[in-house]
Image 1 (tube, one colour):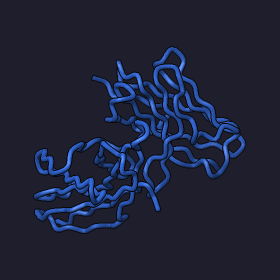
Image 2 (cartoon, one colour; image 1 turned 45 degrees about the horizontal axis):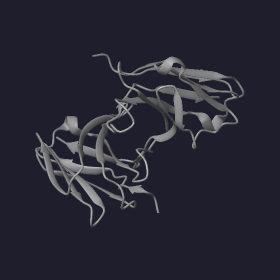
Image 3 (tube, helix red, strand yellow; image 1 turned 90 degrees about the horizontal axis):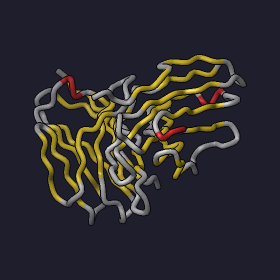
Length: 114
Length: 111
């Protein structure tokens, strides 16, 4: 069974530029999570989807971050414009559904904003 | 006070010894507790979860949960150099299904 797929694995951009990350969850997993992880810290939830619906986006900085999960499968997270402080690893995870808390992570996208 | 607290370490343990990792949490309504392992530059991977008070064993790993004292621990028996990683504790928030993550404990197993 294929795991969670993310792309790109690495991204270097200049500040004020836009950037997008893509995630394909495990087949059949209805719940999808986007996390941000800084060095030496645990993952911090940005947004959680149940199928197409964003059920928890309270930690998403909506002035510059946006996300979508069309058709309830793949998801895209966008930052526009990027700031220096956005440099981090962006992790996508999925779980079977909202009541199944075991989450499976993708390899992450390491973002460096210069 | 952080919702989930872990000692950042590093915790250094000789090969073959027992490594003991601890995690405390603040939400008394939490019902589910998870231990993830994260190698440097990699993403977290699930080791085990525990829901009930007491011990749960899986191979060399044992999770211990004490809800009255609000702590959960992970014991690794016969530690191997390959166990060297950061161990993340995650606890569900009692009011919803969101997991709250600790900052992790870095474990180093010395050959």
